[in-house]
Length: 167
Image (cartoon, rainbow, N blue to C red; front, side, top):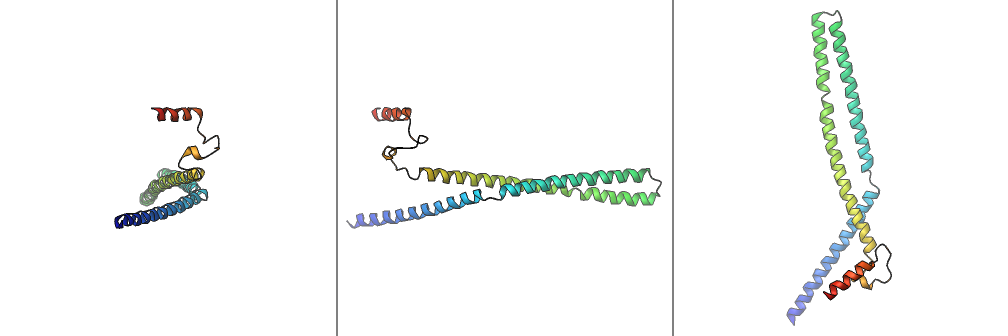
């Protein structure tokens, strides 16, 4: 008898823990749904893509201008020392423009992470929405009474159910 009472106490404690976990998970799902519905991620991704494009465009303009300056210096009647000094500065500008490649790679990596996070939150939100739609159903689908056409079993489902019980 004491063993039975001990088992009941353990089961009761286990059920309490399961209920607590379920409540916490439900809250997390609701929060995830709210995050997706009010997310700034798509907007952030658009802004980062704009930054990527603007940086690339600006870098191309700078590189074209520096190339033009180099060509002008070579064709102008400038003293050799001045040409060398200008060419050295032009080289520094070319080197500095390498920032665009590194920042582009980093921004693309951040965009990939944002996309992954957004997809995961969207899946979690869809799970929460599906759970809300099916939460009112009991464990036995035959006891649910009239159902919406979209979720109600069709004749083929019913035939399959009877075939399983007979077999």
